[in-house]
Amino acid sequence: AQTVTQSQPEMSVQEAETVTLSCTYDTSESDYYLFWYKQPPSRQMILVIRQEAYKQQNATENRFSVNFQKAAKSFSLKISDSQLGDAAMYFCAYREGVTNFGNEKLTFGTGTRLTIIP
Amino acid sequence: DTGVSQNPRHKITKRGQNVTFRCDPISEHNRLYWYRQTLGQGPEFLTYFQNEAQLEKSRLLSDRFSAERPKGSFSTLEIQRTEQGDSAMYLCASSLVSGTTKETQYFGPGTRLLVL
Image (cartoon, rainbow over all chains, first blue to last red; front, side, top):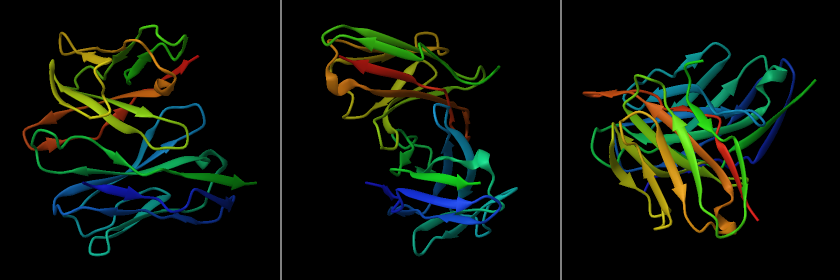
């Protein structure tokens, strides 16, 4: 079974600084997707960034970028120029890529709570 | 707002009572998912639908849980004879899957259940 591990329960960063959140995963599949979702306090989960495993280029979305190391099964999220609105729980998630029954579910890590220090 | 909506947002019930939650997905999405999130944990998959067909159920979904999506649009999740261990946030998500295209899952705000 696939597992996703986030080893940092909590992180903090000064406003305008850069922070990196770690995620490792375990899978025997070659085709899969990885995601970072953000869950602000009492608000719904929103997608931050998505990476297809077959793509060698790391995904970027404005201030958010990932470092995808397929061989190491590592998928870290870098947030540049941190803003107060970035404060949230961040979840790393995995999904298989092949269209078959039973492969649609997202498998989440336990999350990292990010605090932004003004 | 055309996002995923869930009702109610909060539910407090007594142990042994039945509860039902509703999820309205993004209108053109054919896939609908239910997850459960307990305090301090990431969401865990419960079940999902392709249109009105329920394609997979997690072992977490005991016989007291039932989900439906009768017309391939909104979905309901019912918990019978609730137990204190059912207290959690119940999240709904939807996505569009067409051929080999598998789109991102978009989440609703969740229904927080407290069983006393």
